[in-house]
Length: 324
Image (tube, rainbow, N blue to C red; front, side, top):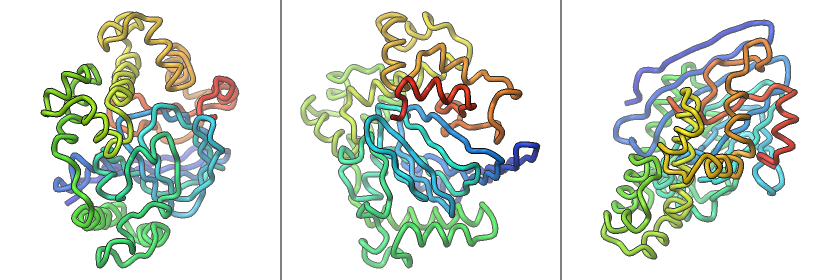
């Protein structure tokens, strides 16, 4: 069953908010990473820059839409959203009111749950009802015919604990009905996570008993990114965490396996649309200038994944091209 729910809420001049975080049933882990419920009722629009992370994201929206831009693709406006594995940042925007549940998935678990080769969804944001997921497409696994219907059922439940419990049941059924992920892919992905993307691809292939070409093919199918691209994302994810913890750029570059500080800066801009300094300064914005809302905005516990952008910083990051 789902772990104990950690609930936080608040209210102030900018509006009210509530977040609920829990771990899924142990039987679903580590494929289903976390559940995060959110309700925002703010008095102004909100913009978030979301850096690439080592996970796919499923947002089950209850009512209000969100507008998401990524790279050169046209923005999409959806209530429920699936974001595949990515190497570029996304910019999410809404009118100040939003509610739903965000589910983080290991990419190989998303392959099983949704029955889609993940390379078709890499660096994309799509309506989950456009995926051949378990709703309706898998016989006898669900009483809902769409993600929209599932989201409505979740919204109607009285507590976050009940909602997360329903998701445990749904994902258990989807997983049983789906194509199992390769044990070797899961092992290789775990090694990349463990090393923060530092393991060379030939060594990773040897570790799981495949050739490099076969590893690349299976990663594209079940992870969405090739092993080299996946390692880049995980390496930069670790770098963001170290920088947010106070490490210098030089120390961070050395610790994460970048050639030098310039290499770190170049990778940072390529994948987030901003420099390490801009990212760190934006995360350190004081409460007087930061947008209102919940204090914890990162999608993964202990990671530096997101920036809530105040109006002045929104203009800066829009000019960098982050998220389009």
